[in-house]
Length: 311
Ligand SMILES: C[S@@+](CC[C@H](N)C(=O)[O-])C[C@H]1O[C@@H](n2cnc3c(N)ncnc32)[C@H](O)[C@@H]1O
Image (cartoon, rainbow, N blue to C red; front, side, top):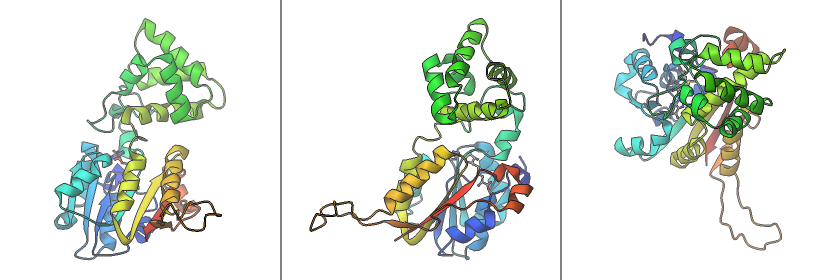
């Protein structure tokens, strides 16, 4: 892997770095370093003392980021791990406080474009979808082994797919004859089961749902964001780029809760909860890519950037 810009085009790169870097000489975390595009923007905004810790669970991403960011290697540590391991990483590096953190959720273009990774219904490849070796099961195992009830739940909860039950039952009928092995077999079965003008959307939703299940994408997201906010210095910032409503809902929930002060009933004479706001949200409605960026990079269309600042 070359580590070039083709690996992934960072979404709202300069804008994100501008909003996340407040103290140029602080320590920053990029929890999803990918091809290093956002990390490069962050490092360019930082001063000579600024350091960045980049994490990614995908070894191909770690290699690409290390290549792209070679000129910053004296200010950079890249670790192949899930962001859920952030507490252990910071402890190991003896970092107590961070000045900022960025989480650019979801998949990289490289992961989607590499047929061998099995993320895309548009390219034929093995039903894999594992972002890294830490994922416990592949898409093939999920699709061929989960009960119809479990598959229905996955498609409904992680894909918000209306035909969830119908597609789950069709998969279970089909796999009795022979297992589903590759992306085109699964895509054809979904298209036959839910035909019509919405088929492309159904394919996206079902593939997204399986990917979220395989990688446990929503597990630990809330805990990791809460942990990162807890580690920020005063004035430190956390930025999160999300690409679908399930992720965005979690981000909004965490930010809302962190910005909440006293929650006592208004008729209580003195505060009993002792709650003080930890952070303030800097982007109340979220920030979306502008039309020019959407045209240049259609994959950024669903992105929302939210940023909060530690009080
Ligand atoms: C949208 S891409 C990030 C792209 C990156 N910002 C850039 O500019 O190149 C998302 C990345 O997050 C990684 N990822 C997803 N979940 C993760 C997790 N729990 N821990 C660490 N990395 C994760 C994926 O492997 C992928 O490389």
